Length: 139
Figure 1 (cartoon, rainbow, N blue to C red):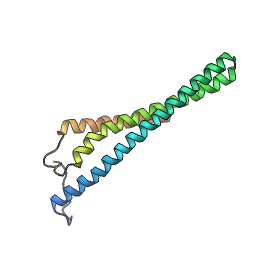
Figure 2 (cartoon, rainbow, N blue to C red):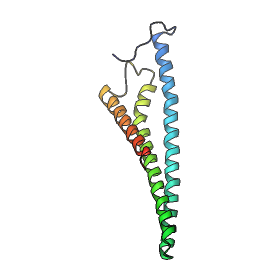
Figure 3 (tube, rainbow, N blue to C red):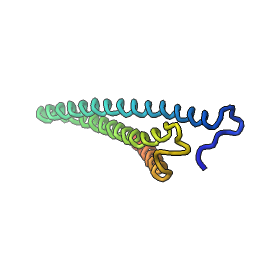
């Protein structure tokens, strides 16, 4: 089992493994960038949520029922966005070890991770992705 070079390929198996590993290096860079951007977005949304909390306190003090409902609705929407960003961070963390594993030049013959942990991480990422999609579709 494992990765197979197509029989009609003009590359040798060693060159094909290196090209495959190089593509995963770029995938790893993307994952790290996505992780960083998601963490920054999480921080930004948390700040907005804190600002809304202070605004809600003012609305409660002024007994502004309509204003309170609007702020609470915005808080709910922000909390959902934060949950989605947290799930994206989890997905990045689940992806990073497999991407590093596949970025090694000899990943097919001497992998960093065994088949069970590798498949477990990828399965956990897939479940997280489905859950993230379902959360995104909910109100």
